[in-house]
Length: 227
Length: 297
Image 1 (tube, helix red, strand yellow):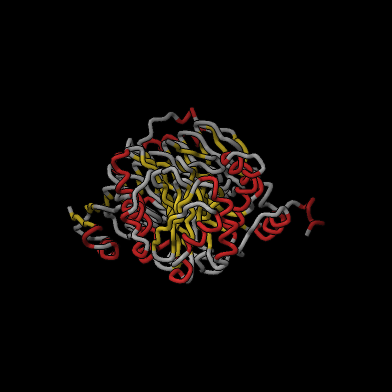
Image 2 (cartoon, rainbow over the protein chains, first blue to last red):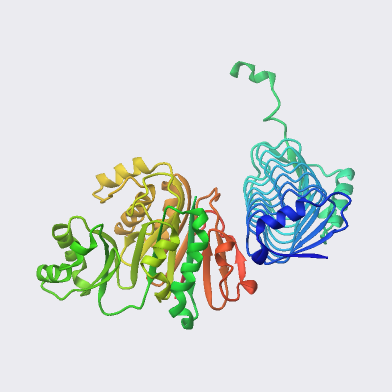
């Protein structure tokens, strides 16, 4: 177990040490002490290491992650796991705005609530939120899966492309071109797998599925005169 | 980008440390606003009203100010100088006459605040420098609000710094930018509201003042700001007995709150709160968009 104290050793040293780990590294377990809300903790990792952050972080924690597992024993500021490519990020507390934004892959688990714009422009990431999410979540989401065990705020899935959205609780309002869709067996299978991997105690049958009506981003010949 | 901090004490034993705690929070927010800084501090309420004034030539302006003002008001005035600022204390019924008289006596003087409890100190410079020149760490009080500014809408000047006084014992700080401030400024000036700079937040403050002069409560004025102000804002307002928070419906300007048995704290970022006592066990959350929150004694 490697231990790093941000308060004593500084933030740049932490990211330099974590980013220096190769795929074959023997230093696979890391513990980060005294994050004290610092920004950009454990960003740009690209090795199969496990990093545990002992406290709350600021902006962009675990951004651009590849391969690594980052667990935050606290809450995170805006942009956690932004543009994640692969790996796993687990937040024990709450997440601020745009959690998992533009993520291409991997799994982001938020055990508390996420605020506005969760999964904005997601491009393949899977996000599981145990609590609620705020307004404008999954705005222009292109691919991947957003699972919400609680409620969703206003304008869920506005201008949605092909991401799949599952909400167990209420949805305050749906955004433009986002509609409720039929839950088919393959969706229940997908949900069961994600809920299990995210440690969420919820049944797939309790969720509703939302997706794109595909009216906004597909060309409609009846509108040809508008162009 | 700007930084906002606020601290409302429930535990009276912390009151002597209010200035020190707020200063720490303010300096942590330097990255969000290195241009200028300001603080509104609510001290003990005495039997006199306080006018806090600022001058670019404090030696000349403050030297005989108390005597000159007392002569005009025919009522005693005392002056406590703090760097470029001074607190004028006088009888409660003399405040509006004093405001008038100061315009004649010292045209270059700026009135920062008036009220029974509030004192506003703000200047251009790094938050640490501003805190040191006013010795903010030694101030005590029941609650206070601080602001670090990164200017986007108007010049880096003392009058462009926050907080802005919106009425007796009230102030406003802002993170964001208002996009309809020119039209609103013209409208308010037609209504006779005095606006002195091209700053967007001053218009926001003048708007709240104008609403309240027309009968709205502070809560109602904040509610209507959600309709009448266009742009991005997280506002924190100070009142005689507490503070309030409101964010625009899009809520992209950050805000974090923390509450314990001892205090309610506000920060633009969690970083600003990490030195507060018992923060590890505090209830920490983000205020909802388009929702007005108040805490008061």
